[in-house]
Amino acid sequence: MTEPDLASRCGICGLDAAPVLLQQCFRCSTRFHLNPTNRAGIDCGDAVLGSVPGMEFGVEYYCTPCIGALNDEIVEATAAQARLDAVERRPGWRA
Image (cartoon, rainbow, N blue to C red; front, side):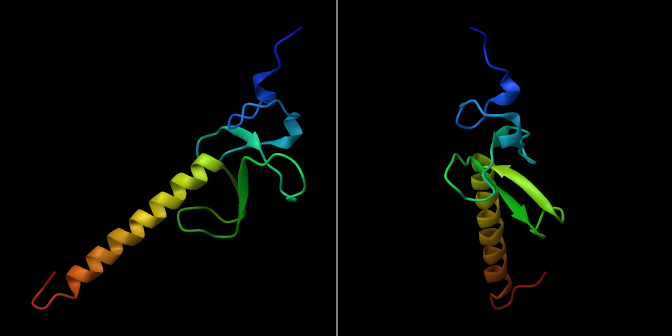
């Protein structure tokens, strides 16, 4: 019995897959199961269409952990901007 090729293994769930069913994450380069039609099967990430802040135009592929990290970064940036906006609205505050 031979060991399966690591290029044919999902880096997220660890299950073997035909290379055509795996996509490379744009953020961390991990190969993961992508199920773009949302039919029955394994899905360990997602495809992003269009322009998202910090991302390029077109289709980009992200594994589930990177999607979570990107969401956390967006939430933190939004919270930081809200804190800055609150300071700027204080009476007597000048830049």
